[in-house]
Image (cartoon, rainbow over all chains, first blue to last red):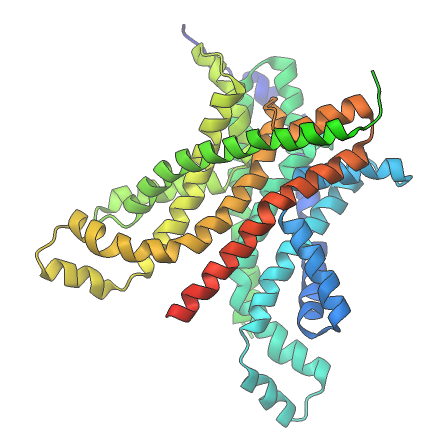
Length: 220
Length: 216
């Protein structure tokens, strides 16, 4: 059996796919920023907080890191409405993705914080820096520099994982692909093109993240 | 027909875990074969082979797993093969796991000091003999903790096979939700079951890692 590849139908739907791409970018961007803030706060709380806070954060991190993202997404989107809390698909996606990324980020940042030698902190105290100043300039900033590669990889993986929101019909790039597939039956073509688009996105994300590293950690 | 969520449903969910485990086993076996090849190519003395393996790793790590599942499940029909969810999932997960395991194991091979290779060479061992008798036996020890850690990722990611109709834990959860209409309880149970599988492995991986650092 011979098969003729036909990409025309796929590219004819480009405006539709572009709308999906916009949501994928929005979800990734917002989640990365929010997840990073939550992750950093949790890492700080895990290292310096009172015992009850440490336990609470540890529970959150382990619960998220040991369950699949798709189940977390289903819980937020399908499960919470029965408790009277209802979100649309995009909001539910943002919530689930942020909670998920926050847990992973917190473990990565914590590893960085714990890698800062004790003597550095003592040196900071000896110079008369306040506790907050020590944490900001001596602990957090160098810690982020150490773990930046791991953090960047996690962000790229998160961007790829946003494709899962298509399963609760949030209209992202992957969801747009499924729609085009069911309209044109060009299964292979559409998924090949979309896979290529994600690959390009991953590359662009890596470049942007590398540029941020240069700006924040190298040029000062 | 909508009915109450009963204890039997929980038992069905627990029973569905065996397909999650079976898929994990297949994915790991396939991924190990691909991953070992990728790792060996990545340290090979022939530069084009190294580039080829690197290209593969970047391509797979830069695309969503969902796309691989869909390409294999829907896409293979164009060559006239009707693919069962089993075959599609096995193929997609082998490719996916192969890229990640390949990178992990490459790191382990490269963590063995250069002098060990040179010592092997000075004994007159060929490249493959150096690998087999000197490098790999040492690298395996380093490789176990991150490999167990990746196993956790793999178990969690088998949940995506639900979208191509592969009945494992997550899909069983969707089916149970459809009949009982109790999504919150059902997905909470599903999450708890995943946790029961993954958490011990996470702990084990961490303990192995700790032991490795002590041994050094």
